[in-house]
Length: 399
Image 1 (tube, rainbow, N blue to C red):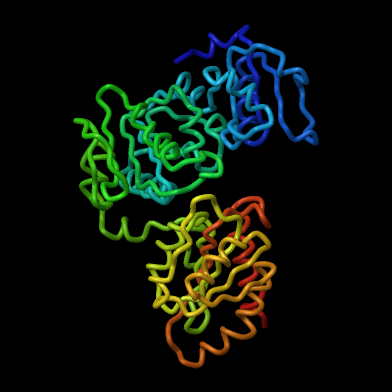
Image 2 (tube, rainbow, N blue to C red):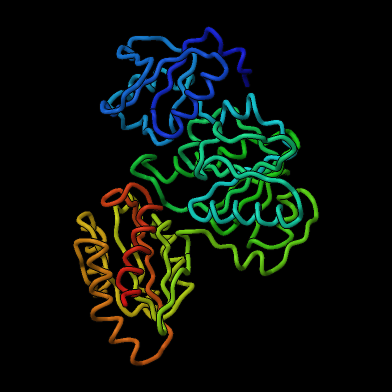
């Protein structure tokens, strides 16, 4: 741990000038901390640019979590300075976090939804709370944490680089192959996720999904089989009012989001599904599905859906980076329709399959659950989800 005063007159590099880097700069400026900045994007106009940063020695390097130091062109620089790398979360926990209770949540899938569920339950019980971490706004931009429960959504990227987190509760929802293009092996990815338990305070408690993985037994770390009222009360640290409806109706934008209905068709936006385990989870929720897959598929992902085809009526795939997906579907003898873009998928569905299938009046679902990252066509999964919804409204709300 370190205080903000300890950073005065230290040599500091802010590496990466996206949302996180800008929030760190703003925080340092307000506390009269000097720093240098570097971003690999040469188009970004920076103040305090250190063009010779590779030759300098630093006391702290504040790194944006999206930067992959293991496959970076400057990986030797990062390797040499690994023990000096910290995150905006480290700054927060060392200097700002004066709150009643801190809950850390990680997992391959479902982190945002679970954090949202905890916040909803706390608010319902008139307990103030905030969600930070991998949940939108950078933590150093958020004001007024006094007397608040803090729920921290932690990605593998943040866990990998962070050093000074302090958690009352740490929860791992699940672990399945993801981000292996960055972490290389499943063993390393699992190790990074398990790091969350190292950030527990002396009297802290840990929880993990039993069927997802095995760990050595520890007195303060317990397994759970499902998300239920007892687990939620244990995580919150006190008995509060929780209804079955709270758990069942916990929906987020872009995560199994039911946003539109036309005739006998439901339209589901699951753009947040950026790996295939998440897509399989979505498929199990519906029947008579018209499934849309696509995006940049991840190393080590298993694209097997043959066992779920009794729920699926037709498969569409879109994009130019789906060769491995096509190969997997062919090997499973699954027919699919390949389109160049997401808009083309919606156009074909509207003109052909929608009108064919409204005749039988059977309840059906158009499920957009890509199973891959969005960066082939879109900036992020949020913008991909918004674009999907926009196309649906364009075609299905025509006068």
